[in-house]
Length: 280
Image (cartoon, rainbow, N blue to C red; front, top):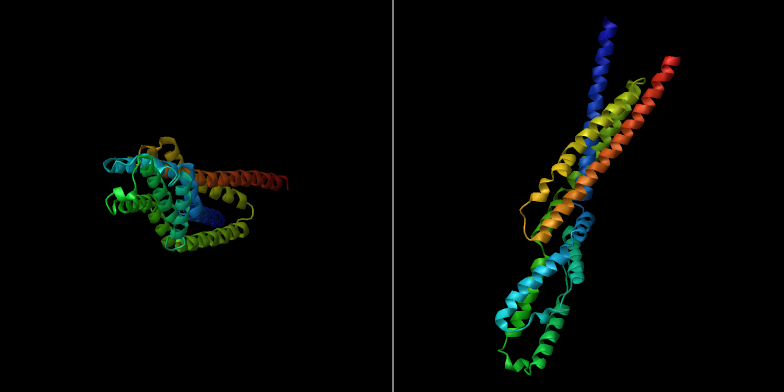
């Protein structure tokens, strides 16, 4: 009877250790995804590119500036070549890099001003006017306003918030990931040496449980897609958020698939070990 109780207690202890291992796997994986994907500079830039954020921002900026130019009598063509979607993409990347590096963004605007001045002078020449025929300071103020609008689209509060959040929690997430990895190694070592015959079965339990926990939420999001119904405007910001959420979901699911593979490997090894024990 005492041996049965001892065996039962040993099984319970091993199951507790296995569940602890699955929790450490979950913690380390979640910290990895949050730090390496959700709040990663490269991942944010990748989501911006995937959502064509710069092209959407460019189109809306052109539309807004076109409305602003109507009272001045200047055509929207003065904006042609002053800035392009590629310019906005490069400046967005430069802004993000500076935010993630805790530096002040140093984005050159003189070239935009030069292009605008050239376009305005060219238009005035076409209609037989010069700057002397325009009220003093009007063109200068207009160019300054156009550049300010451009800056507002580049220095997105949403992107600045993501960068600040990343800088705030990056150190904590790295510590959490290290703690999770340490817990994984320690619990795996204990299970390996304390449960010699059933260790792979317990490993399978841990990997399977971790896979279920880490994939449940992302799978629900992928299936029901509540993030696709976010009432966010403008559209290019909505597209960026959806793209970033989708990339994050894929990251969690990829780790879950890895755990499933480890689960299957552990099951196969456990079955082979069990057959060898039966033959001896």
